[in-house]
Image 1 (tube, rainbow, N blue to C red):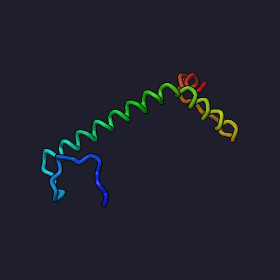
Image 2 (tube, rainbow, N blue to C red; image 1 turned 135 degrees about the vertical axis):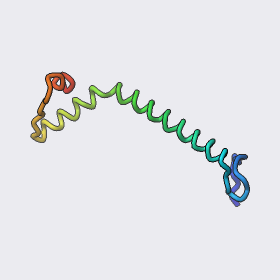
Image 3 (cartoon, rainbow, N blue to C red; image 1 turned 180 degrees about the vertical axis):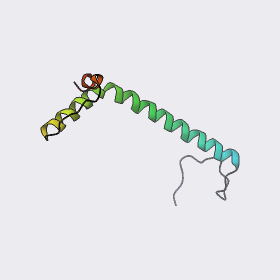
Image 4 (cartoon, rainbow, N blue to C red; image 1 turned 180 degrees about the horizontal axis):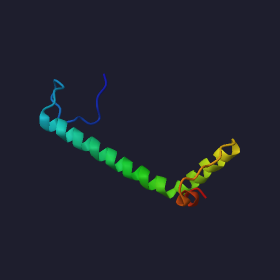
Length: 78
């Protein structure tokens, strides 16, 4: 027999959730998504220069030629 360590109080024994329980779970899931999104964004910005230079170097080694449409794009890839 499997016993849960933590029982949820908001769910009824039949497994049916009311509107407020659905909204509470939706709020929790949206909060988790927002926290993960901002964490990944901040970490990504810290490593963006390294990632761009890695991708440009890989593209040059396999023979791709980088095309710059505006003058500012050249500065972002160096």
